[in-house]
Structure formats: C-alpha cells, structure tokens
Length: 222
Image (cartoon, rainbow, N blue to C red; front, side, top):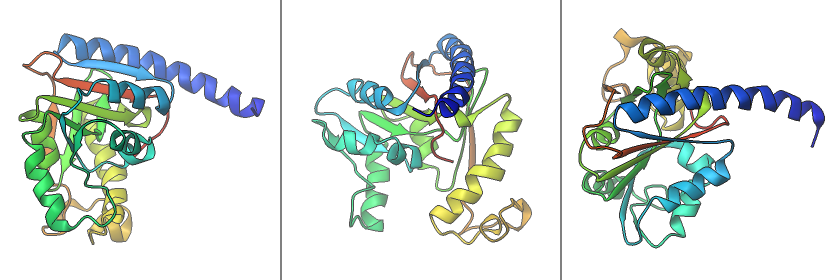
C-alpha cells in the first residue's frame, strides 16, 4: 500500500472511531443499537447476519446500499427481498414494493445524516422511507458512511439541503432548482419535482433495539 495513502487514512479512521463511539453511546441510551466498522466488507456481513432466514426485506432508496455491495450480498441471502434495484423493474413495481415494505420483517435504508448525540435526520420526497423508519417494519437497519456525521440537527438539515438533495435530484432526474443551480432555493421548489417533502428527526425508539445503525469509516452515499 502507498504509505502516503495509509498515513492519510489512519487519522481519519481514528477520528471516525471516536465519533462512532460517542454516537453509539447516545443511541443505546435512546433505545437504539449502533455498530461501527472501518470498512464496508465486515459491515455488510454484519447486516446480513441480522436478518433471519425467510424474512421479508424492504429497501429504501439508497446509494449507500449499492456502493457498499450490500444489495449484491442481500440477493444471495435466504430472504424474500423486495428488490427495487433489480434490472428491468418498473415504476409500478417499485411503488408496490414501497407499500409492501411498510409491513416487512426488516427494512434497510441509509440516513441522510446522524448527529454526534445520536439523532437520525432524514428528508424524503414521498415519505415511504421515513414512514418505515418510524413505524411498521419489525426491524430497521440503517447503513451509513461517516461522511454523514454532523454536530447538530440544524447542521444535518443544512447538509441535506446543500449536499444530499442536489445530488439526489441529479440521480433521480428531478428538475428542481438545486438540479439546475446546485444550490437549494426552497421557496422556488414545488411538487411534483420537489424531493424535500418530509423532514423527520428520530431522537429515540420506544421499541428497544428495533432501529440498528451501522456506521462505516468510509464515505458512502450523498
């Protein structure tokens, strides 16, 4: 390995571990369970181990699920996967999967941001992803890179508006103002193209350990 690359990674991973340790402690106090892995491979293995055989598994729209290789691993599991990312899937099929995911045994997605004190901050267009996080599926597993860690809820919202939303608008080809200019112009952004419709902050889970947060010491997703 290039020693310069290794030297640049070591401080970053040390800080990521320290941040994750702090977040995991806050999650535990609020009825959620946190995990940290230096890279994607053990994180993907851990997620797969959390899913009982035969489970109905729903997916939120997530670049992280694809980039980490998790979707490929899930396809090899003994589960009933609502695979919205498979080749040839239709818009109608994806919409049906959104509804079916609300009653899934396990729901897997990412989070737009997480604060150092363990708050999960998410913005949705249709609302199916945040709805499933809040209530419905028996278990929720959120997978995210440490690039999504922020100090406060307000900074999380700023991150969503200035980073996640413009990139997701390009990804799903929605002609929002941020698609055109690269910057959020909220008053000018309206349906049907608007993808920032529901803002949800999850501070705690009444059902202990229903929500599991898997953090990876690399950058994934938007």
